[in-house]
Image (cartoon, rainbow, N blue to C red; front, side, top):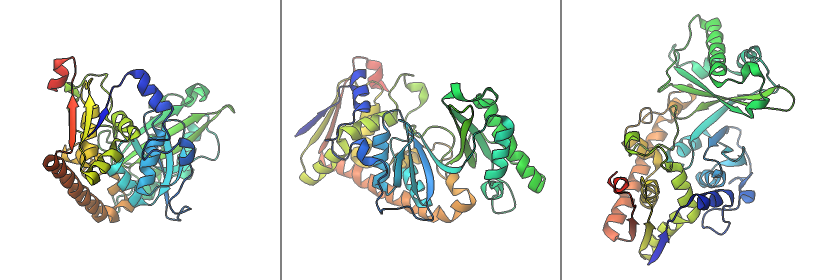
Length: 360
């Protein structure tokens, strides 16, 4: 019987995130991941994507994406990964990746620095094809939401270094462009927009900012939420589900589960400080091969049954593919849960000094 003891102190977490062990099953050193492809190049039909994560988990996220067939995997700081692939890959990542917080497709990146709201307005007008981006294919318009991320904020010009007002500038620029084309404007839906947009500004030493615009494949909010528990029942300092999944993948838990299934040897996970249960819940999902995206749909998180990526003009042809992905993931999850229930090969033992945590 193999026993995995999860004994987490903050120093262990920090060490695990900064120095991913090269010897762990399934996780390669960060230097060997960046720039890798599975087919040696980028196809003409490939999109460029950005997936964000908790700082330090980028190597784990990169490995997850490579396992799904991503190409041109590159770092973007210590909390994001750029990669390429077709539309189908984006949907596979949306369903299966455990450590991502946002999954976005790159629409445009300015070749020149911006330093004013007028520059941002000009960027939207020159680089964004609003007809294909916001048209619904039936003569109407898709709904939008806009948020902005500021990197190296102290180097971003004062006129555009406020995320709320810069988001309004992007939204107004899109609406003005649409109005000039057809006389009306798209509606805003902050909860479940058809096209959730994210602008990213990065300050530079040259006095201006780089700007990129992305569209999220999923509704506004973070993908770390699985939907299997409510915020009211969880301590505000609870470990995020994505962090728990990342640590488990670093530990080799997924590979140990696969090995246990082959050898029929019992595998036991012990968490003596379970807290709100993030680690054990994610461990159970990994062991049973339950896709996080499938969990979000089963728990009926808003907007995940038909994610924004399927509402776009270029996403409508993928509805049947999405249904096939869901059906396949459902079969795998049912088989995984049945194996755990019938074989008794996976054992998870938990404890916590606080009785209230165990009652959650």
